[in-house]
Each structure stands twice: as C-alpha cells, then as structure tokens.
Amino acid sequence: MAKLEIKVPDIGDSSDVPVIEVLVKVGDTVTQEQSLIVLESDKATMEVPSPEAGVIRSLSVKTGDKVSKGTLIGEIETETGAAAAATAAPPAAEPKAVGAAKPKTVEPAAPAPSPAAAAPPAKPAASSSIEVTIPDIGDYNGVPVIEVLVKDGDTVTAEQALLVLETDKATMEIPSPGAGVVQGFKIKAGDKVSKGDAVCTLQGAGPVQAPAAAAPADDRGQGPLLQKPAPVGADLVRDEPAATPQGSSGKPGELPYAGPGTRKFARELGVDLTKVKGSGLRGRIVVEDVQAFVKQTLAQPAAAAASPAGGSGIPPIPAVDFSQFGKIETVPLARIRKLSAAHLHRAWVNIPHVTQTDDADITELEAFRKSASDESGIKLTLLPFVMKAVEKAMQAYPDFNASLSPAGASLIKKKYLHLGFAADTPNGLVVPVIRDVDKKGIVQLANECAELAKKARDGKLKPDEMKGGCFSISSLGGIGGGYFTPIVNAPEVAILGVSRGVMKPVWDGKAFQPRLMLPLSLSYDHRVIDGALGARFIVLLTKLLGDLRRLAL
Ligand code: CAO
Image 1 (cartoon, rainbow, N blue to C red):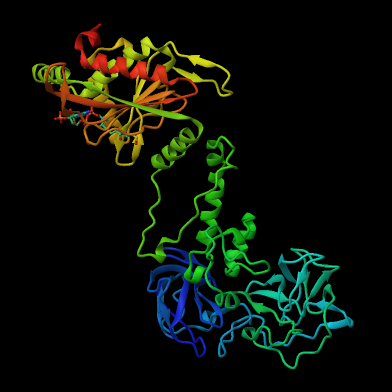
Image 2: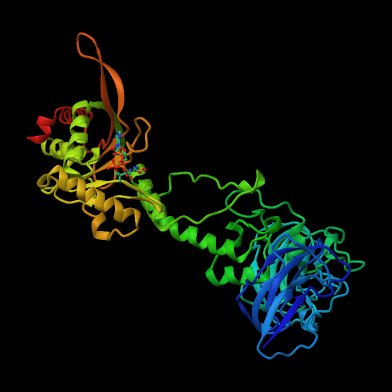
C-alpha cells in the first residue's frame, strides 16, 4: 500500500485551465488510465487519467478550479506500493485530448486524431456534385459512427457536421466539404468507418478546389472543401451555453456539448443528448445530467396520469437556470414530499374544486374544551371536536362519504366513516386516518389523534394507518392564518380546512358581542357535490360546532 500524489501533467502551453468535470470522488476505486478530471482550454478538452490503479483518498480540485502543470489533483492509495516518483506525473497520466485539438506538447499514450492530419480533398464527381469520403482520422481504422446528423434530401452548408465518430479517446464530427443536397447516404449509426470510406454524394455543390492546407479546428469556414474531423468539445465551447430551457443547444446539425464518457453513457441508456440540459461548466452535459434526465423522464408517466388530458395538453413550466441570478443550492426532495406532490397535483388537475368558507362560533365549545381538559387531565385540542362535527354532517349528507367510480359513471357510497387529518411532519405532509369515528367519543378521538400525530412526526406511521379515509381535515389552527383552499384528498370528495379561531364582534340582533369564531374552508369535488349541498354541509358544521348539545346528540 502506498499513497501517491496525483498532479496535473504537462498540458502544453496552457496554464490556468478550467476543470470542467471531476469524474471521481473520494473513496472511488479507479483503474490505471481511468479518467479523473476533465480540463478544457479554449482549444481542447483533455481528460487526465489516473497514473495507477487504487482508491482515491483525497481530491484537491473541484469543478471550476483552474489548474496548471504540477497542480495537485489528489491522492491515490495503490495496492502495489509502486511508483517511487510519487509526486511526479507519470507518463500514463498525460491528458487525453477529447477531440482532435490536443495540446501542443502533450503526447497521449494513444494520440487522439489530430486536425493537422490533413483530410484529403473531396473528389468532385461532376462540377455540381461531390463524393464525400471519410477523411484522414489519424491512426484509426474501423471507428464506430455514433451519430448520423443528416439524411438523403437534406440541404447542408459547407462545414455542417454530417456524422460523428467516436474512438475511446476522442469524438469527431465529419463536416461537409461543401454546400449541397445530400444524396445516397451510405452510413448509419453503429457502422465502423476508416479513411476513404464513401459517405454520400453532395448534389448541387459548387466547383471543388483542393484545400491549400489542413486548417486547425478553429479555422472553420476558411477552407470550405476541407474535410477535417472537428473536435467536439473544443468546437462547441465557442457556442453560448444552451439557452433553451428543456435541452441543450438544439441547433440542427449541432452536437450537444459532452465528453465521450457522457456520450457513451447516454447511448447505453438511449438518451438523446440534444434533449439534455448541461449543468457543467459552460453548459457542458455531464453524466449526472443524463441521470437526472432519465429520472425526470421516468417520472413523467405519473405526471401524465395526473392530467385529465393524459399530460399532453398541459404546457410544462420552463426550467430556469437560477444560478444566473445568484447562489443556489439544490436539495433533493424527501420521499414523502415527492409522493405527496404527485398526489396533490393529480387531485388538483383532475378535480373541479370549489371552496366554500364560513365561521363557526366556538365560544362555548372553547370554554368547555378548556375546562374538560383541565378536569380530565387529558389534552383535548379542537381537532377531535371538529372530527365529531364532520362525522355528524357526513351522516346527514352521505354524498360527502362517497367516491366517484374511476370511469365517473357511478358514486360509491361508503357505509363506514374513517377520517383523515393532515399532519405536518419534518419530512412533509402525511394524512393518518382514524377509523370508525362514528363509533368513538371525543376523548378516544383526542387520544388517537395525539398518538397518530406523534407517530407521523416520528416517521413511524404504518401504510395501513394512512389508508381508507373517507374525508380529510386539514387543521392549521395551531399555526394561524385565515381561510385557505385545501386540495381534496382524492378519491375522497371533500376536505375541511380549519384555521385559527379569532375573537370577532358578532351582531346578536341588539348589539355586537365578542365571540370566538373559527374560520372553516370546505373544498369539494363539484362533480359529486353541488354548491347547494356544499353550503348545507358547512352551515350544518357551523351549527354543530356552535352548539355542544347538537354535537352530543
Ligand atoms: N384555533 C385556535 N387554536 C387552535 C386551533 C384553532 N383552530 N387549533 C389548534 N389550536 C391550538 C391548540 O388548542 C393548541 O393550543 P394549546 O397548546 O394552548 O392547547 C395549539 O393550537 C397547538 O395545537 P396542535 O396543532 O398541536 O394540535 P391539533 O390537535 O389542533 O392539531 C395536527 C394536530 C396534527 C393536525 C397539527 O399538529 C398539524 O400538524 N397541523 C398542520 C396540518 C397541516 O399541515 N395542514 C396542511 C395540509 S395542506 O398542506
């Protein structure tokens, strides 16, 4: 076992080169030559490989840092204890150029194709057509085609990318040698090509001249007939980062800005990189972006199911890169929050909601609650009283204890009466359910509410304790605030929002009296409950809460 310092090797004339990706983390086991970081100058993208196999013990660079030859990247613990020159960058650690524009003085173990390897001129087939062939791509033969960017009949401009090749070291675009219409395209993704292989014919191209000399990758446009593999990374660096909210650059024929590793990963998963927004430096697409894209795509069926139009009619909210406005932190949502978000969204878009509000005079109820609490020693909050009132109102108006059948053709009436109550927990909203409320008294309901609320906060609710509710109560009275619009907890058909009781002057026919008024907000599914029934229900509720004798009946 030995610890080696890994340093940035000779990267040619470049210094202060930005680190655009860190591909490993502390604790990762890496193989020799496995890429550790990606650097990107304005000319080239380079991966710095590990000099040895081993375990990464520390990392001294992060994305955005600028490094030069000799900058410490981190430490690796190797099995062998070899490498006496622990702090020197061993030859294997020379950067691999991603794309053709490799730094001048660096000689990677297997050199990436160089733009200086002059492409042969495209052979004119006739004055108005060009036979396009694969140009000189360095020492490579049988290079896989990873993307075909045009098809027969497409009109292309000179230098527009026709296809993309990828070796294990580099990704190269094969640009069009001239403007014209693509005919007889012979290559498909997955084919393996070598220098001289026929690509297509360009019809209607102008007269062809052989290029004077191979142009470097940055000289795009100077030699219109020059076929040169263009370095994908360096090429796209010149473009502005993607401004489109959903995906990357999106210009036809333009490659998404990503390294070979990310491209390979995306291909394995069948991800179209043009749809992925890059979060790396200058909008570069990194592996995490592909993973996030896949997760988001997999989550979409749930969102689509939530939509009455199957998700197709609802325009998505455009993604915004908030980091352009200031510092941000992205925190993954807790599981409960994600589940309740999907559930609430489904309910919100499927159910035509109406919210009816009213005040219940709980002056007497409150006096009784306090004295009963003091006398019994049992903490009685308002919630069990509200539950009892809701239970009685549901018995009077059984449509509130029903669910619409999935096809919407019938009403399923329930002969049991279980009530859910929303509980605020550190991980998000949960709705424990109290069973058979009609068979229980206030004290028992109070005890069960307290027990389930504690379980909810401790994250110990069992799935069964959150199932089977007929109606939900969302009580924000302990917190404060006025009326609100609770979202019906589908497939239930109504929900009661309870806010903080406030003293209000109430006219008794002769004078204003100070009364404790409880704001109630009843949301219901208008497909099942019409406005008159909604109003009757809330009026009965206020009567029940306003008169303890009715509640006791
Ligand atoms: N008016 C005035 N005071 C009220 C009140 C009301 N409507 N409701 C409760 N209070 C008082 C209680 O009496 C208690 O006072 P004391 O401590 O002086 O006795 C205090 O506020 C705290 O009550 P509580 O909220 O802890 O107890 P509860 O039984 O009323 O509610 C529970 C339990 C689980 C519903 C509640 O704690 C909770 O989590 N509420 C949030 C629900 C929620 O998030 N809803 C939103 C869903 S939609 O996003």
